[in-house]
Each structure stands twice: as C-alpha cells, then as structure tokens.
Image 1 (tube, protein in one colour):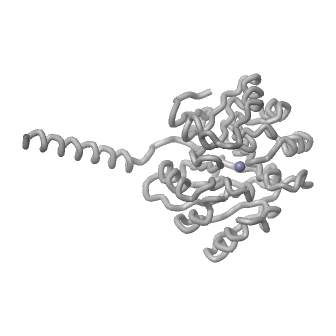
Image 2 (cartoon, rainbow, N blue to C red; image 1 turned 90 degrees about the horizontal axis):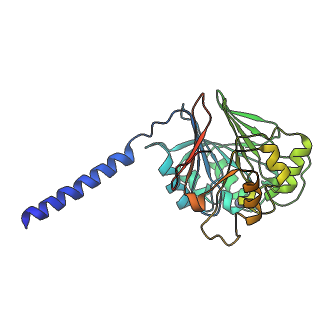
Image 3 (spheres, helix red, strand yellow; image 1 turned 30 degrees about the vertical axis):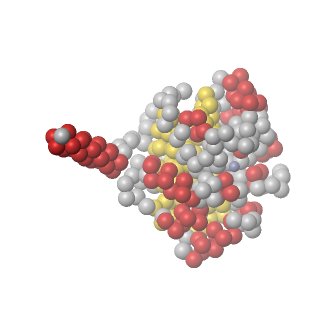
Length: 290
Ligand SMILES: [Zn+2]
C-alpha cells in the first residue's frame, strides 16, 4: 500500500516538474511572429520581432483575459510592450487597456485623434499621461519602423472621414515584412474599403485580418480581390450574439478560395514569418498553412 502511495506521489511530482519546465522553456522561433489572441469577441494582436520589439494592436474586451493570453505568448519574465495601437474606441478593442498599463510597461500608445474625446479613450489618455507614456497621433501614410525590415504603414485616418461612427475611424495598418504583408482592418467597414480602393492605397497582402469581425458590412468582393490574401483571420467569441462572421462574408471568401481562420473555432492563431521565406499559420486547434 505504502509502495503504491509513494509511486503516485512520484508520478504527480514528475508531471508537475515537466509542466513547470515546459511553461518556462523559452520559445525559440526564427523571424517575426504575429499572434491573434483568443480574447473572446474582440481584437488583440501581438507582434514580436527577433530582436525583442513587441507591439500590441488592440487590447480586447476584458483585461483578465488579455493578460492571461499575453502571458501565454510572451517569453517568460517579459513585461514590456514597445507600442500599443488602439485602432478605435469600441470596448471590444480597448477594454483591457487600463489594466494593461497597470501591469506592463508600455512605451508608446498610437491612436487616431478623431476618437480621443470618446468614452473610454479619455480615461486611458489620462492614465498614459500620469505614467509618462508617449501618445502618438496617427497620420495617414506614416510608416512606423518597428525595427529594420519590419514596418507598420498607416493607411488611415482617411483625409476625409467617410462616416461618423467609431468603427469607420479605425486605424488600418499594413504590416510590411521582407517576405510578406499583413493587412489589419480594425473594424473598418465597406465604406472605408471603398475609400481605400478609390485612393489607390497599396492593399495587396498575403494575409488579411478582416474588418469588423466578419460582419456583413465589411469584406466586400472588390476589396477582397484587390487585397487577394491567401488567408483571412477573424477574432470572435464562441456563439457571439452578433452572428460574426456572417455567412455572406464566409461564402464570399470561399468563392475566392481564401482560407478562413477564426479564434472562436481555431483558438489562438499564430503567424510565423521567417526572414527569407513566406509566413505560415498554425492555430491552437488545427495545424494548417495555406
Ligand atoms: Zn470590434
């Protein structure tokens, strides 16, 4: 009996030790990585570079979920972000920001000054000021260098806003890498897509984070054909009440032969971009790459 008890204890200790070791093992990946975090119905996207530059684009709806997800993808003991982009003022994109500023060192916040006076943003800016965080007001056609060979190009704010709502004031960002491009649409809708097409913005990208979680008001056919991505990602909650992504958008994407990844089905989505070869996608729940 005593022998069985001892072997059970030894087994438990072995499992615990292995799990702790795995949890703290540094993740050795080559190149730039982009993680579409599983934060429920909302966006939070972490970009990490080989030299340790870290950029978060949106902070999801809830701080506890954001911080847990960040701890899953950040290397152990890393507690700082170089830049945080807030694409617009909706809660599902800024909900984790106040707690994030309390728990992590943030170097710079980038936002569209059109949304500065909106509810939620004012409190964030007041806290940023108290903490001495740089606040950068986004300008169209700014190319923000993350590090050599890694740029975030701003395709908005549009010179003439096309609609008064927060979604259509979203910052639209193009991540430009030596091998690939990723277009991040925030919650911009078809009206912004059409404006970008009309302006002749450089939209072509191998990967697209579709606008507004796959709402039928975004991801128009002409726009999708101009971007021509091989894969499209959405961040949604399981059984969300909005019905995102919409069946219309999914059938448009299927008709164009684009692979869809959705955090509500796939869990966390990981894009890995080696220095000289195209990016590949893996997810928590399926390993597949277009
Ligand atoms: Zn949203």
